[in-house]
Image (tube, rainbow, N blue to C red; front, side, top):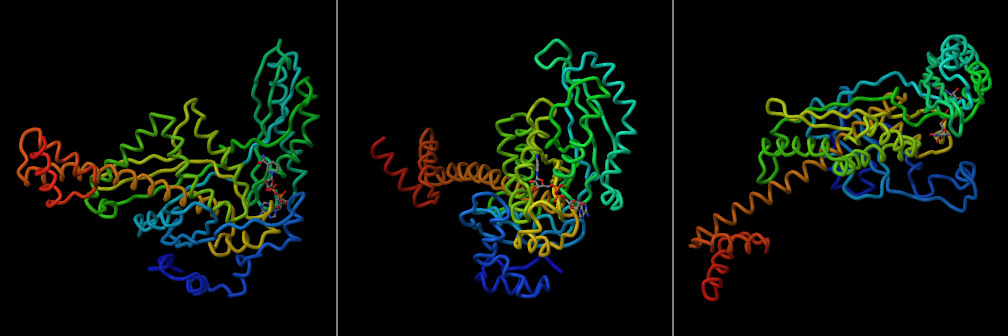
Length: 426
Ligand code: NAD
């Protein structure tokens, strides 16, 4: 299957559907899941409370993606124009190598809070001593997960507060659970609830909250791409100039949280569009992404861009807790179809697709910003050249050039007109 579908964007919806079926070899009837009314009202009523209808979004596929040497059509559901086009254009720039990814094991963290611990150091030591036993007990509660190669992996203890204080001494135990292909929130919450009383007893305190953390930094993905200068150039901007401008924009985001927030929003444009299309808990991923971005104490860009020998290297590192089983998936036909279209059959691959989409939309946004800046600079230079060619000298060069750039019509005739007028009434 190739994700190169030249001219896909020029086709009508019906023709696009035919091309999609051709490319994916899916039966035509499967596309009913993304027809109007694709989510039956009874299914919607079973998903949340107080249902009075369903809510539709455009569903598209971004083309040109190669991820870990496999071409993929990337499903996206989003209301914002340009995201799908931007992702497709940027993905084309990365070809033929495309995107490469590395995932950690799908380990989620469950938190068990313990308050009113008189001696937090002794409590933490006791818990650490019992960690192996607690992990083994937790594993017995999820035999099917263990049989799939997942299950509880470790128990870590952190001291959060010492007495006195409103909650006395406070500890938190982190239960690390490999959730395999599930996002894992319910799995982890169930285990934390089951262990909480024992954890509190062992540490000499009172059990508080028991729920997963959405800062899923143990379940992170790294995605990389390399874009040659020849793919970066556009109109008047050379590839080398665009490369330098994108690297500079990356450094700006690394220096400034105000810029980093917008930089990361450009990443989440791609990530969220894939998450929505595939029925994921995108609020969980958003919370995790921004907490991760700020983990060093300063809010940082999730992706960075560096220059390397005639090319640009992009790298995105972010936590991505997604599932191909569980959650809303079983009841949502369009989400199931999205996974099928993308050929995704396990959670790591879904994380790779979402992250690659995020790096692509980041690249497209930075290139647009960079070339706009370069274009404007070039037009200003060009305007000065035209002003001189029209016969302007001294301060008239700047005045004619400024007016030329301002009117957006940077042409020799217009330069001569402006110069004549300024000479008549200086
Ligand atoms: P889930 O409760 O549906 O559990 C997944 C199920 O899939 C398990 O029962 C497991 O046994 C089964 N399974 C089948 N094949 C599997 C495989 N290959 N790998 C792993 N498990 C497999 O779903 P979940 O993933 O535990 O929880 C996700 C849901 O929890 C989402 O709907 C999310 O919105 C919600 N949630 C989120 C939060 C949060 O993020 N803070 C809190 C509570 C609930």
